[in-house]
Length: 304
Image (cartoon, rainbow, N blue to C red):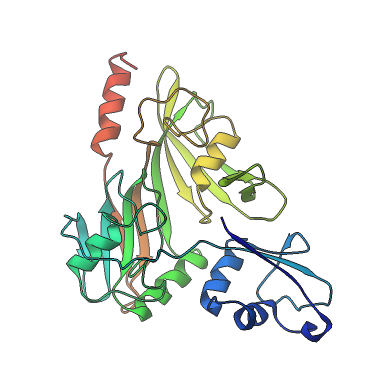
């Protein structure tokens, strides 16, 4: 991940750090806010809030993702749409589909499919993420809500931030949990040894809370339902690995032998939010996806 480094001078004293960065870098204030929210702004080695007041001599480190220098083109890719109206869509994303274009993924993303399906998509997250309110990893399947206009996008984003949007996941983990339910309350930040990973850490981290419930136990593994109370990157995968029950087939956070290269067994099966226009509580749910059912069947037959 590219970085920019600055040392503040006396003339900067008292200015808000987000305002200073907007004036002294090529990034918009909204993009800077997202970097701050992601913990990618450090002042003297510590994460700060957007309203941090600059002081002479402070050292500022800003990490950022490079924008894709290509146009995003519509593609006729089938979408599993559970619901659609003038403000939003709820989509069941398949395993293996990237949500938005990025380095190495310029085509065949959910965004390419959305642009073919609808001419009306929110612009809040920029030209490379139209309609994208939240994301799930490429190899995680399941439910996403996408916005068709900026007003809907901002209201849905506020619900995610204020914990009024509820998300639950199915996951298969290594090991047999001895208790039926529990919670993992452990802060998550970037792994200092590997910038592509997250980890449980007290340094430069944010609160993270995951609730889990055991649905089924096998000889050496368990099927769980997990609910996100916060929305940190890779949260469920990091938390379950942290307590010693890594997600099956997770190439990043599990040291166990992989089944194949299809990625972690994680499916976003439940999504609930308030409709941005009507205020009505919307709820959507999907069952176990086929790849889950096939693996469970093999487990039950003793083939895994």
